[in-house]
Length: 353
Image 1: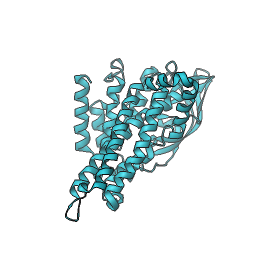
Image 2: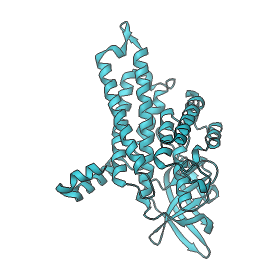
Image 3: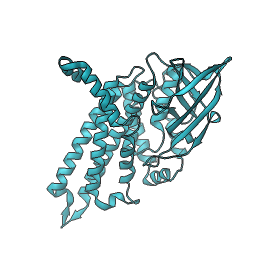
């Protein structure tokens, strides 16, 4: 990492540590919007880390900027930082304006295409999108739509859609968006070359892999600390071999997720490496399931209580592993590419990831 990236990550780490408390996690889970914390993110320029300098952003390399997503996962930041990073990056690369405030992206599922039609000098966009992250709080949505087989990037503002509120298991907003609106020409542009619905889903999957890796790191820290503090039969439970074995398994899952998330960060871009991101999303998803289960075993009943913070993190892991493509979907892509490579090409394919 460059000195600038190191400073940015250190600054973000201090901000998240100081401004995101267990009380804030509980407030967000009950539906509150943390406006003060969001303003702090914007004032530090964290939300524009992926936007080129000539468009008003920090212009960081993708792998460096996406380290912020992993840090946000570690601290449980209940704000749409990953979605805003992705939306602002997509808008800037398409030459569209990047709005101030929280942003999100759509569609989250390839099976829900938006239809874009010409109407004189403007456009009309139609469609229904389910489980759009943080839509109710977004100043705008960067949406990918189809026009005669050409992927187009559209900038939607709240006056162009209606919402039905919903949440995921972690109580994060995942709203249904109904779109039927006219768009100005300045809010529609061709997507970057080679960037379509599958690439958008892969970009979102890369961000979820990074967020899960950070969250697994936090779950590991919490579990080790609890095992050293909680005493049974006169000594910390971390001294018992069975608990030590669980912690070793959890640490190995955290290491695997961290390595996988590094692959996802390197594979991110306007022409993302779909195979690498598929592998990363599957591996971090598997690690998430194992880590959440092991952490609750170590904590016992207290980890499920509202008073303890563990459940805020494990619920995110259970939710995120199914977003932007479930493991079965990405495993199918891996299997198809392995089959296509054949016996002679299998090892080179593995080595390329």
